[in-house]
Length: 119
Length: 110
Image 1: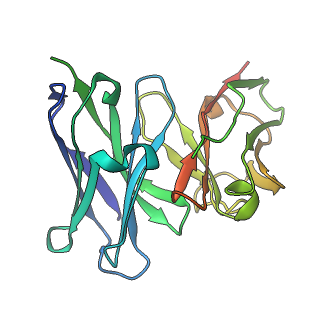
Image 2 (image 1 turned 60 degrees about the horizontal axis):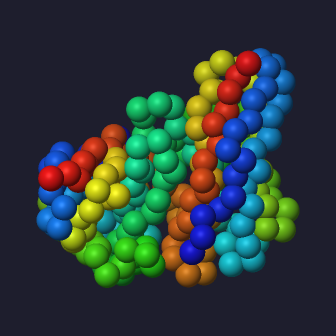
């Protein structure tokens, strides 16, 4: 059974750095063609794709957030980490990690973790 | 990369069919057969309903179908049921960033 679960702080202050961890099971990020992405959703708003990391350590970022995002993986721990710097209240959202089935589809999603940015 | 364009809301009566459109460009929907659709109930994570334009994951009802014409993709739900009431999002592979989502459509079952 494939599962993913996000973890991280529920509250961060403006200008701080957010570090989120996606811990998964049922698949390996060392397997060819395996990819994991981060997606976020502000309250009442649409989904926004943030970043992707592939089995071969290729990394891709949202154009609008590229300068603030870093994605990495620890294959031995079955984890993917997302770092978002210089947090702002507009970054308040539920953050999801998801496994990708092919280049365009997210077949398994984590439950999401809500992050609020407030002083 | 601009978001794909979806109607904000659609509605239909139980048993009727509905279609949700998703408009993009030749750099996303029109250029690749990598359109997906997701269903999201309140407070829940999105669920993959259609991938690669027309394919249904195992376990998804055959009442859900996808199609594409030019730069526009569509999700059709035949025989609406109360449990279909949810938000629906389309997404597409793009030539610039790997994925772009639509703005979402709220489906109301009357």
